[in-house]
Image (tube, rainbow, N blue to C red; front, side):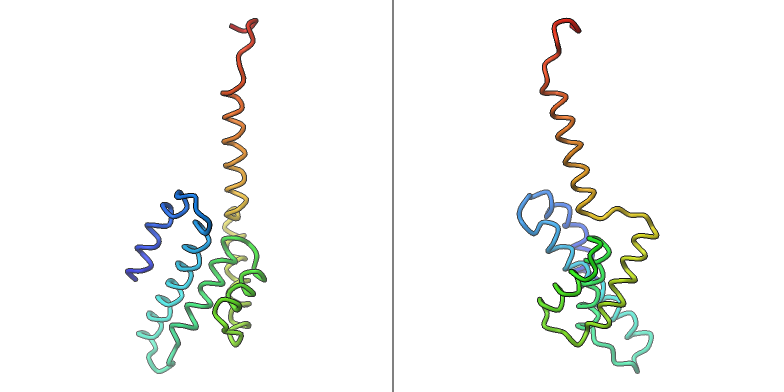
Length: 138
């Protein structure tokens, strides 16, 4: 729980630093920690199931990536490649598609689309400021 909260609060600073992985690394860590947190909650409620926090962390990582970027297959391949857990492909598929569907139903914009829009707005505003005012309008 602590790791999730700390990463959630520090993620904007990671992005603001402007370094590669500024969004990517915190996104994967938030997904993994939320998946592990969910497994912990389920394990306390149903201890007889013997749930794996690691498996839930891997699935959470792929699901959050898919919901945020809107690329479920990329999220699944990336997660399997990074973790070597090909046995979780079906769970990753179900979680990623569900997470993406929920994000679409909530009408949230994919992260890279919103970043592109902000960048274009910032450049347009800078262009307006940079253009000199014609003498006839002064």
